[in-house]
Amino acid sequence: MVETARLELQCPIFHSYDEALAMEIVQFLLDAKREKHVVWNHFHSLAWPPSFFTSEAEVDSKTPIARQGVVLFIIDCRSIEHARVLLKLLRTHLLKLYRSAGHSDAKFSVFLHKGERLDWVAL
Image: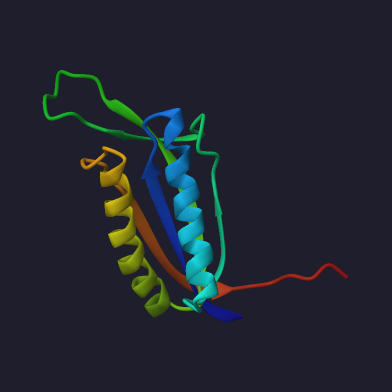
């Protein structure tokens, strides 16, 4: 068993052309791995049509709950410290990326898990 950390990142998808945002995030993760940010692995859900949705209540309690399509990224890092450094860099990149796409009010959810990695081998 090896100590590991997992980042779960939910990025909003507003339109089909926002698939490019997901691909920019993938490229960021590939670059981070190449630059030795100790990203072991990452995968993501389909960008369009969205497979996952998040809901949030509107300010007015009489309006319906809004559903927002999201792309789910799972990013495995060597340790919780590496995940926090990566998250700080990723946050800066995401805000700039979404702002340039006209989505300055985009909301992101991040879950950070610390655990142990178990690799199984079929015999």
